[in-house]
Length: 322
Image 1 (spheres, helix red, strand yellow):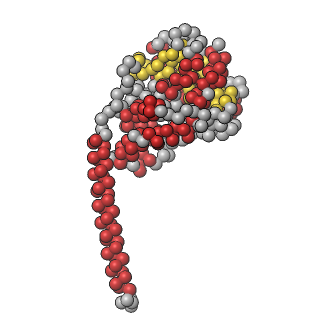
Image 2 (cartoon, rainbow, N blue to C red):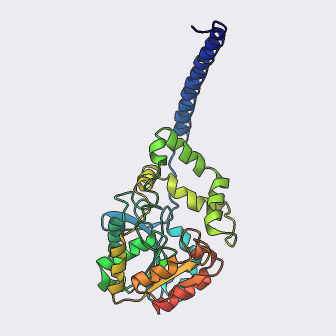
Image 3 (cartoon, helix red, strand yellow):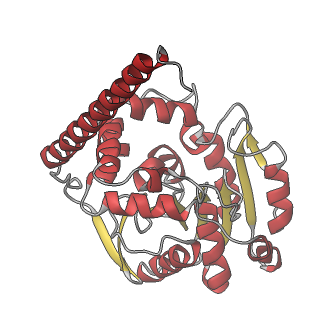
């Protein structure tokens, strides 16, 4: 038989539980309404700056940039969630002796948002880009996951590629990002709100950039923040972002990457010595896997050595390009 003294407490707990449930339900409705309202207010799309260059590369209308007017061609390929503008420091070094090109891969920068966002499709875009611009056996250099793109392009069309360079990337399909629960836990309108709030925070953009680039990189000014933020605010960018996030970091199976070893073309591996994304052995393992000489390590550089240390990275690529 239950103790009658306990009944008032049970009644109170029941009432508290009901009130908590009601409060949470009201909060849910208010947050949802606020999310819809915020998304409606911020739905205006950003536009690329005037004067952008575009070329049809396969099935992707591709935005690209050019530095220099003479010398053999070098094509720079960015990694995940990056764009062609990131190459300014390195491209200016290379443009002293080469004509330098950088493209926005599909789904990034200001190129057309056209999937799938995998190494096969992006590698085909790069091959088509080289062909569309009539480049003669260029050096193709890929940063981070861009290494997988240049590897795929070289394997697809070795006769038209002069050399391959991996910059802070091993080109491997590791599954990184593929188990990221964020795209599934956050559904619209909430994920749109979260993404837009993050993009509109100068502090957050600067913090993320500083963490990956390191203390040797200059703090982003307003123009620098806009350079990294604006591509995520153009038409189609949000949907492409979530698709890429679900797909995970672009990469190739190990045997596919190792097939580069059999290609008779110069190869090079360049890493920041303090790159936090990879192990200390990764540069050496990557060089051995693709048949490149011992890797070039940039002292004290992190994952964006192409930005923090353009001179030594440029010198290494110059030795590859000849």
